[in-house]
Structures are given as C-alpha cells and as structure tokens.
Length: 589
Image 1 (cartoon, rainbow, N blue to C red):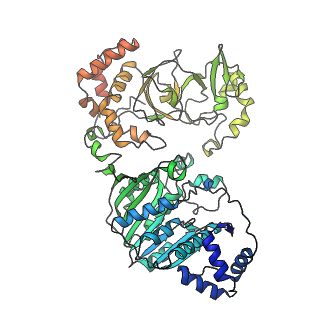
Image 2: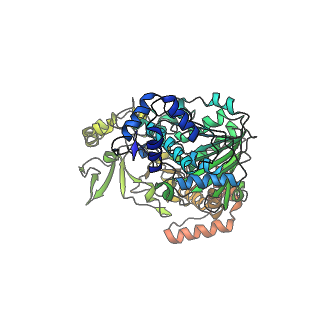
Image 3: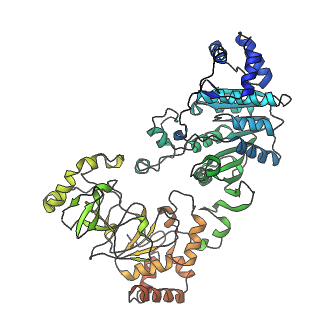
C-alpha cells in the first residue's frame, strides 16, 4: 500500500487506523508518533496529517514508483543492511549517534535500531520526499513490532545532501561516539548532469584538474566520493566511524588521495560485496569502513564481506601507490620512470566516418557507404580488441589521419587530396555533432592523440581496457605505420631491434608481476599512461638475464621470421641510461 507515493505495511496501516484517525490536532499527532517511534515532527504541517487521514479513509491507490536507478539510486535491501550493522557491532562498536547522509527508504536506520542498543540520536537526510515518508513508515513498523526497544531521538530531513550543513552538526555531536552509515548514489556528476538532475554539488573543479584533463573526463567524479570527502571534512575531529557502500573506484581514489590530502582517517578497510546479488547491477562495489578523528593512515585492508577472509592490502608504500603491498615488495626494484614516453592512440569521436574497412578491395565506412578516396591519408588502425597476438602486421580496420600534429590546419586536404576532402565535407554534420569541448575552435576534421610519435614505424602497444598483461609488437602495413585508437597505449621506435628488445623486457614474468602489484583489475582502464611510465626499463634489464633475452629473441625469430640479433643491445642500454641526472634521451618519442 502507498501514501505520499511511499510504501507502508499493514501493521502501519492498522496503527494509523486505530490510533490516528480520531486525532486532528498536529501537535497531538506528532506527540503520539514521537512517543511511539522517537521521530520528531513526523508531520511537518497539518496539511500532511489531513492528507494521510483522508487517504486512509478511502481505498488506497497504488502509484508506480519512478525509476530511481538512473540516478544511481540502488536501495540497500534489509538483509544486507542488517549484515553490515551486525558486522560493525561484532567489532565492539556501539554508537550513540547515527547519521545517514542519503537515507533512502531507511533500511540502514532500521538495521541500526535493531543492532545497536546505545543509540541516543539518529539523523537521516533524503532528497526524495516519498523516501522520507517510507523511512518514517518503516521506523514506525519496527517499533510496532518491537515496542520495548530503545527509542532514540530521530530526525529525518527532506534535504539535498549537498546543501546540508554537516559542519554545524559536527559541532553538536563532537563529544559523542558517532557512526556515519549508508549507501550514497553510485553515479558520477556528468551522468546526473546529462539527466538534468538538480541533485548536484555546486559547480567546481572538484579534482583540481588542468583544463584539458577536465574537458576530456578526468575532471568527472563520483557523487559518492564527493559526499564521503565532505563527511571526512565535517567530522574530522569527531570520534566515531564511517561505513558506506560505494563503488570500488571510490575507495581506491580515497586511499590514493590520502597521501596528498591527509584525511584524518585510520583503520581503513574495504569489504567487497557481490553487487549483482545485492543490487542486480554489474558494478564492483564494497563497504568502505574507517575510523574518524585518527592519525592519517595510507593503507587499506581488503576483505571478502561474506566470509571476512583477508585477500590483500593496497595503498602507499613509501611514495608509490600499489594494489598489492605484499607482492609489490618483490618487484619494486623496477618501479621508477620509463625513459620512453608512453602515448595514447588517436582520439576522434567520429568512428562512423573516420574508420573504414576493406571489402573486395574497396573502403567502406561504418555507415555502410562505399568510400572512394586517395590512399595517402589512410592508415591501418588497431583497437584494444585487436591486441591479442604478440606480433601484428595486418589490420582489419583503417583510419583517415587528417593531421600530423594536434591543431594542424586541414585546408591542405582540399588541394592535395580532393576526393578525401569531398568525402569528409559531405559528413561535416557528423563532425560538428561531436560532444567533447576539445574540438571547439579547432580546424575541421581535427584529431587528438596525434604527433610525430604516431608515425614511428615500429610500436610496442597494450590495451588500456583489457586485463591481459601482454604487450604487442605492431609492425608497418604496406610500408606505412599502423595507428592505434585512444583505448591503447604505445611507445614507438625507428628500428625493429629496439622494439623487439623492449617487448621482450615488457612481456617478462618480472614485468607482469610488477604490473599486477600496481594495477586494479576492476578499474575502468587497467593500464594508463601513469601506470606504464612507472616501468623502469633500464632496471628491468638487470632483472632479466642475458640468457633470457637471447632465448626470447630466438623464439621470436623462429615464430615470426624476424632474423634479428643482439648486436644493438648495448646501444639500446645506452638509450635507456640517463645522460645526466634528471635528463634522459627520448628516443622512444
């Protein structure tokens, strides 16, 4: 049954019918409800009381609840909420004050009432009014079933969490044992913005990214992360704990930023949950648990929520951020700076026009149109899904490369390659519909992720998206360098020997062990430029014996008919060696 678009039980309906229908005075009704539930101002005005009584007196209509999942609103089921609060109680924690910053339907509040006997005050905040009512109804249902349970003072605020004054609240509760608990929205600011949601923090460069990073997505942030950091800031001097269900990426970001931000949190734990089972969503998530008002700690223990087995610890080892502290200690000798700069592939956001395939000797675009253009600007293209083999010299896709460096004027295409220009101009509207602001004010048909490095004939590449710790040697196709898309990272070389030496080192077991200790398998991009730039190839040569290099070179010669030797190995080592302190050759650019 529903009232105010909120569900309530038959027990609650019977309570209202027997106890409330004869009460018409707001103060009397609120006194009754506060006596029964501890909730202050159950009804905010007489209009709410009158509406409830009117709806109780007629047959109750069932109103379909709007789809809140698009806002990252995945309500915690009662069983999980009880498991979380019970787990906290088992650790000897018995809070006096409970704060739930986005209380939803109130399952965590009810679970707290069920598991903690020493609660004096509960504060819940919720922006969605039907959930405010449902929380009240669920609390009432709990106390009807458990009339002898401790009744703390309870306040449920209909409020936007981003505007709620937690700072003032922290001054009130500072001398009490606090537990902040809940499940903030699993959505990013850009996702809410695209939904025209008003439930957003004030506009700010939250991550303090530079202009290009902010425009290309690095400035995007998770709403739950924003809320969590706001709570750290407000309650840093308050004794207590924080326990929030968040995406794994939020936990990782918090621990990563801990080195610079020095949040006053300790005993940081991540308890991995089965999101598919609990919320029916394919998102890696966990219970973030930490102690407030603590000396800053920089390591997080990871557990399985269901059996409490410890799997690993991640965080900071000296000045390095790692995903597995124990394994990292065995491979940290190669953690440094790569002498060659890893680059990301081409970004164009126009695959329908720019990417081509060949059928019967003719090009065809993703719109299924035959494309008749000059060959000069057409290059082979590899995507993440193509980087499966150790050596690649043929591509299934092609790309039109309109610039040799970012920002280059493209008028030359009209005069030198008229057929290509005609084709591109016919699809001008597709280019103009590209949403990213990085293309604004740029020449027609602009690209990003393009430079001299893109035209190196030999490349060593890896997918940023896949969890395969395997590097691929990319050879020229039809005497032209092959391009990679922006889901891939690569270093380029002028000669094949250096490229082969590099890939032997990068595909060594020592490199794989190192990368496994610093990468997170649930990350959107397992490999990034920052990760790859940590591979110190010079130090890696000391970990791989000359015999290993010779054996791997022979294997590649035999399998791929390369016919290479180690005559340039010493020269390769010199390219890896700093000329002087803080200065390295950049042969791989």
